[in-house]
Image (tube, rainbow, N blue to C red; front, side, top):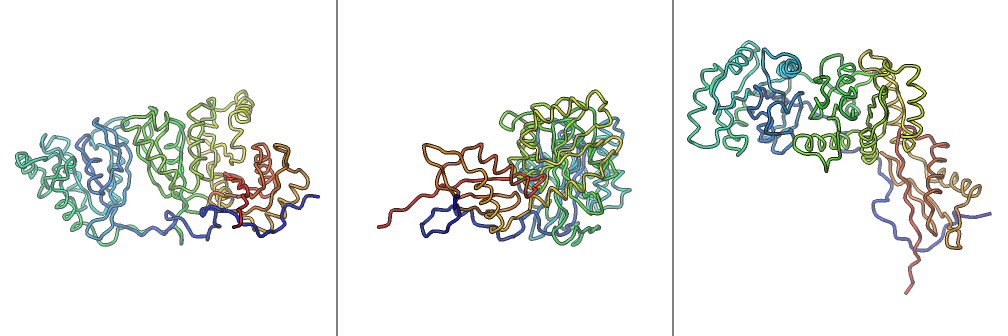
Length: 472
């Protein structure tokens, strides 16, 4: 019988990153401290997102030289003079808008209602339009502190344009250039004078904060509709036109007697390297949202065949190392004829994520959305699961004894021992005397899942081949 786990005194080269986790929490799991909120509003294409990037000191908000790129309300952390605050970027606000523009305007109004102060951005070169006047009247009735930013004042010659905006009745207009940064310091000083030390609303999510969930999927699979159903409000703009969401949108959701932080992301049409303009930056934001999340809900349209775009989203979630729940949306449109066909597609197209948990939902009707909570908890438990080293090696010894590794180059590699190098996701390192065939590695992973579970979590298995050092 093979004795693969005898200790020896030989020297091994082991990478530092294989050290066992100390159990510390990742940075994004730290408790969020409530911060005062500034909502940035204005009509389309006045430079709100560019000004938001200037205020927060980094390029986060998606910017493109066409109106209407921002559609939802999106929050960013900012810091000025040692004080932290939140800046909420909004879509173009037109009080008499119709259709999708009306939904975008509603998001801006909701951001205003939840903010501690509001910044109205006006294009100083154009002057006060009828839309600007209408927005100003709404702000005057709202009772919130308001600061007026006269944007696109790029030099001294255009400063006189800003003074004309006194006519809006919102006080002194602050001349600023989002493009060049001119006047941004004075604007931030004025913002700090308006914002309270503490926000108007405080909400907690336990010692580690709410668990973070990224909603990902190709365009028009119903991500925003599902988020709206979960929150019970129109948190994200929904339209039949694919690609309505551009920026990631955070929402606190009460689901299964627990608070979760859901992030609605942009639908991914193509690889990041092949995207351009706002689509390129939206793809980067989606990638960042995935990396900041703990678990990804991959939304698929159950009424349509699984596409290459779906596969690309799944690959992104796996490569990010997140726990995964696959939600088959629009289940109310799946008839008896479609169901066996869908099962065959899943067996054929999603063979690499058989371990992912599955929930059949309908964002339109609310069918089975309550089943997401137990699936998320189970996936997260697996994502953080650790197998004690002794138990792992006893299990591996029995596995190897029953089915030893295949012979390679006339020699049979011996498996010496194994350790779990980390969690979130679980990572295992197996030390051997020779190369293990990919098929045998897949066999080990399959048996790991059969005997220890890990539903909803990817598993990483690395092989380290022993190298004897020549003693001098």
